Length: 387
Image (cartoon, rainbow, N blue to C red; front, side, top):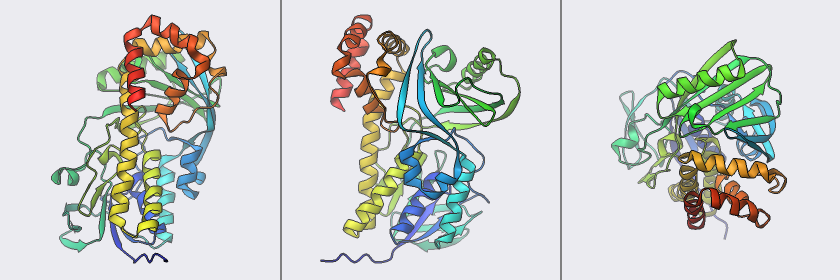
């Protein structure tokens, strides 16, 4: 029997990346989409580094390919005294986030999406009603992509209610010694319970870091700047970084919460492009199979949130334990672990850790780590097994 999918009306509230990727996927599924954005443009101001996998570039499509600034082959994980290098499957791409969202908006317009800029949604109901600029409209489904600070989801008691950390990127004039590698530094003196990063592109050096404490963040970035001898600052940008856990309640009635508003972010880095692109692709697949849009959205968000919550348990253990970070990196460096693990998946952090810790060829490394920090290792292994 051939499945007949009837045209539905969908509202997307918020014109950031998450709102735009769900808009494009829903249009592809055959829905009529109206996008509400309270500002007069999308993509501005810039706030994140924009590093994604080749998988994410493919999921987003044309706008991502047109936004590529640079490509990196590997990551160096550096501790205080040692480091290891890991090749990344398919590479890592740096995207121009402002241009990305502008290109996504252009594509949405070309495909018939109704865009309402400078329009603030003041109220939503579980029945799909939206109030904006003193007018009310009814939709078959509503996507709330209102960002971390949005209030609509809170009025309905759904979505993410945790506390973010602060993330800052600073760009300087200059060159890195290796413009094909992203360097990630685990040093609690620089970033506390997070990490710092360094990368180069187009005669530019970018440094970044995150912390729960803005004063500590400023101090760590100043130290990093001094360590690298950087002085010619180009620009500074950043914002809240959501590390989860993803909300267990992302849907209610015809309302669905996505992006930062739902905690749909990778819990080790805070990146939101992969989880939301994946959820959008799953919605497309499930809707085509069932013809029930709200059920497809609810199921897709639940699948992705469950995956992120598994990653969250491992990420918390690593980020909250500087001693374990240093031990794993130093042992991995001694045993040349990078030669034994092959390419790592940039999007699936729990698989990255599992591949390193549970590879049979790395039993010696595991024994060394166990003797150096037994409690932390036992906790990590138990969380991996639970996941």
